[in-house]
Amino acid sequence: MSEAIANELRKRGLKVTPQRLAIMRIVQKQGHYNGEQIYEELKKTEPSISLSTVYNTLEALREAGLVNSFEINGMKWYEARVEPHANVYCVDKNEIIDMEVDASSIINGMRNKGAEVKNLNIVVYAECSKLKEQK
Image (cartoon, rainbow, N blue to C red; front, side, top):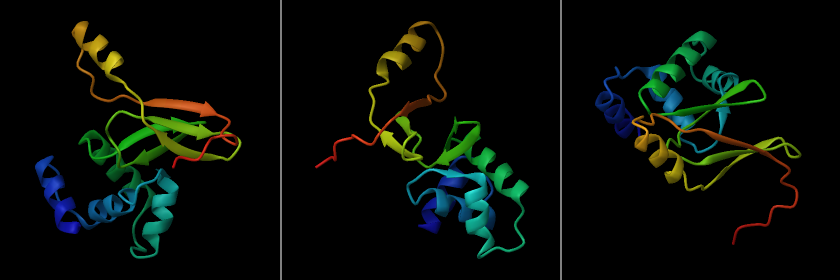
């Protein structure tokens, strides 16, 4: 996995650094993470890493299109999933789940107006206690 991450970093014009590799390994575990969570996880193996290094690295990865970021209740979250989807914040469970959406009408509408969509973030606040389990 590290070699695949390294190749992707190079492809996007980024230097391969231990910090970038470590952060990508965490984010690619599939989930939603804030900078502090990533920092706390990294400190276990890289005790000299700083919180500012984590945030600077996350921003470089976001700008390169390797991670997505979005805000919920004033906190920035990061994820490896970069294709259009909705991030649903379950207010009653205090968790974030992904939901498939058809964002083509938004993207095509913007293209028709001459804009190039660089990123699309859809955040939904919902009560999820009655969600039906997917089979």
